[in-house]
Image (cartoon, rainbow, N blue to C red; front, side, top):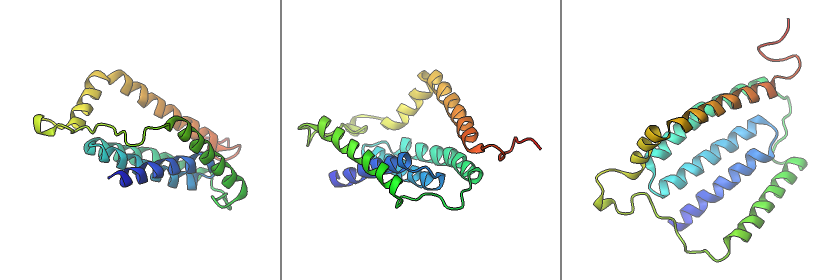
Length: 173
């Protein structure tokens, strides 16, 4: 189980570096899929199966539609890929910073594990992740509305950045 969780965490970091280092939205969307899948795998490994499924469906259903639309607006004939020099330099720099920070903060905590959500499932009548989702909707309604507003703002920012001078849906005719 430790090897599988390490693989998921490595995939999460690799997906985030792929998103951060690549200027082309085509490859950025692929990095987002990798990061979302690996992050949901980490959640499943620690007992949050329902939350992981909801996160994966909402994230891939909502945000990748935005990236597909922005990729269609920013259609480059020859996008930069991960093999280009500048993108590989950025990716190497990001992986170097992640390695240094991981070595700095890791110290000697090998073998320390997080407690899973359903650690004492024999004594519980409800699953921990579904109770957490209910608590998020009841007590965290304000934060949920703020997050929805931030996602809407992100949509407008992405569409404005990819619009360009003469392209886009709102151009002067």
